[in-house]
Structures are given as C-alpha cells and as structure tokens.
Image 1 (cartoon, rainbow, N blue to C red):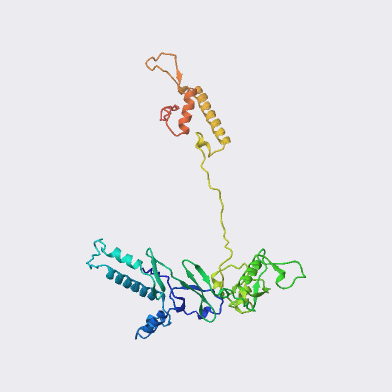
Image 2: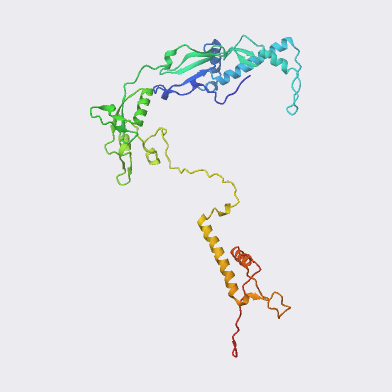
Length: 384
C-alpha cells in the first residue's frame, strides 16, 4: 500500500532563503493534508515525544510525507484487519520464507483493505479501487518571497485546479540596467554602418539577437559596450594581469559579456561561463569506399593500360630475340636421335613456342624445362 520513492522530498523542510529573492521558479506537490486537525494533533504528540521529537520532525515543525504515508499504511491495515476479524475467523499459521506457500486468508485481508472507505488519515481521505488509492488530493505549492504558499490542488478526477493564478506571474520587472561588454567579430557582433544610430541599436549579429531574447525572458535592461583593447582576454605572466573582456569583468566595469569567446581553463578560473551556444572543431570528411564488382582482369588495376602494353611488347621482343639468337648459336642445334650418330637431321629446342614459354617461366620465376646451352673453356698450361 506504501510506494516508497527515494526522490520523495518535502519542499518545506529545505532552507530556501537563498532562492526567495532570485525569481527562482520552484513548484512542488504536498500529499500531507495540513488543514486536517488530525495532522496538527499528531504534530503536537510528536513534539512532546522527547528526547527525539525534534529529530523526527527534522526540526521543521512540518509533517513529512514518508512518516505520514507509513502512519496511514498501518492505520488502514489495522482497519482492514479489524473488519476481517469481525466477520471472518482468522487462523494464524506459521509461514516460511523458503516455501512459496501463501497465507490462505491473505486474499480475504486484501479484499477487506480494498473495501475501506471514508477513512481520514494524515494524507487525507483513504480509499482504494482495485488495490490503487483513489479519491485523494495533492496540494500545489509555490515558493514566494514570504514563504511557501498553497496555490492550488490536484485530484485524479478533476486534475489540476489553480486557486491563485497570480502566483505564477511576477509583474514586477526589476529596474536594472546591466553593462554588457562585447567585441566586434562577424557574424556574432557587427556594428551597423548607419552613423545616425545610437545606443544598442548600433549593433547586430547572432550574439546581439541572443542577448535580446535572454533580456526579454529574464526581464532586464542592458547597455552594450565594445571592449577598449579589442581583446577577449589573455593573461600576462609578467604583469600578472588580464586584458580584454576578462579584465573588464574582473574589475566590475561590466556585469556580463556576450561574445564568441572560447572557454578554456585559465579563463574559467577567474570568471564564470554559461553553457556554450556553439561548439566548433576540426573535422575530416572523406567518401566511404564502395566495393567494386569482381572482374576477371582485376589484377591489372594497379598499373595503367600503357604500362601493360609496354610489358607485353617487351615480352614479345625478348621472346623473339631469344628465338633468333638460338638459330644463330651452333650449340642449340642437336641430333634428335643420339643413337644414329651419322644422321644429318638436327633440331633446335628454342622454337617459337618454346621461346615464349621460356620467357614466361622466367617472368613468373618458375622453371620451364628449357635452358640455353654454353661452351665451357678450360685453361691449362699446354692448351686452351
């Protein structure tokens, strides 16, 4: 029956002194019905519960949501158990956490609790519909300069009902004129060529439009000034001083700056930056390679067509040269029938086809079975 939410916090228990006068919009819901006399009675009892009464209330004097829901859970459980005891015979049994055996009367107790109605707890009327709480309300709270006030309520059937719409509109525009420092740089800040313009009307650009929008949303007046030295802000280690816009902000001659200023660690150590309105960086663009279809002559892609033509021409020229040289060499002519020494028939092993085959094997660094023949000359003291 109790839904424990770790994010369930009570707005009235926080110290909101720093937020009351800064136009901070803080809106919250409250489930504890503080208008119920029973809540006030319970607070009085808890305050008298010494020595830990103040610790229970978190020293705020406010009934928090978590103990209130716990109280109502025990309260409605007791009412359901009493109703079940009056019309049903309860049989207590020993249950084991190891055995998945439910209590026989558990469903009956659930139905009795679900049938509870007209019960007033610390969180208002307690009723259930199919196991879910119904017919309850939440108070809508709004932080004002004086205190946290109730400005409406929410119910499951009626939805939100604002009883104080004026609490959400602050018509008091502060009469504040901020000095805004900037630096001319296109297209962020540009000075118009019309010399008849004065004041803020002389400036235009992206940062100027951004400043106008922020001023209209927050509600303040501003006066734009160009930085005298035309610098964003650089630290000088010798003089230990800043220049540019950073110096104007540090010496409080400007309230804020709107410019295309790069955020870095050195500048963040002396001034505060908002979230960047633009992120820039160096990027490399390249086309995603597409897979080429497989072709029979894909191996020829590394070289140009002219190179392959030169290779083929050299191949044919060397093969033909080998064929001619073999015809002129006497060592390449052999008797095809060594058994007939008197035969006049001789053959040359380097025919046209064999010449091309020998060059092919040499080009592919493979053996071809053919080798040119040479004559060896042995030198001695008596003869050559």
